[in-house]
Image (tube, rainbow, N blue to C red; front, top):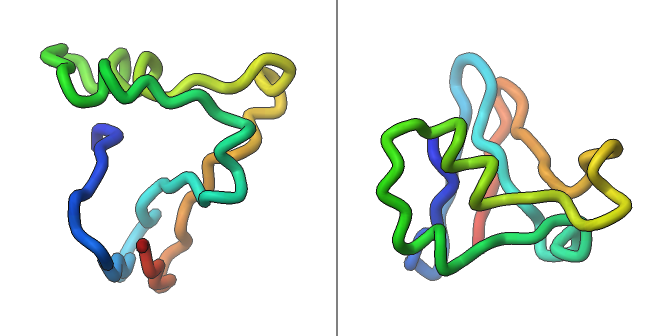
Length: 80
């Protein structure tokens, strides 16, 4: 799936089978750079290319790739 911003105040995402959603906690925003302009205007068909352009790792974090988390199977995430 492509990175996106939900414009809802609260969302519960549950992974019943397989890997869950990827998300960036507020506390990790210093580790990633989000191109909101590209995010809102992206017209690329290739989701992998779009995702790499939307979210990039901050300088010094390119190798560690800290900041992006993925929910596990049977885990529920409350996004606010």
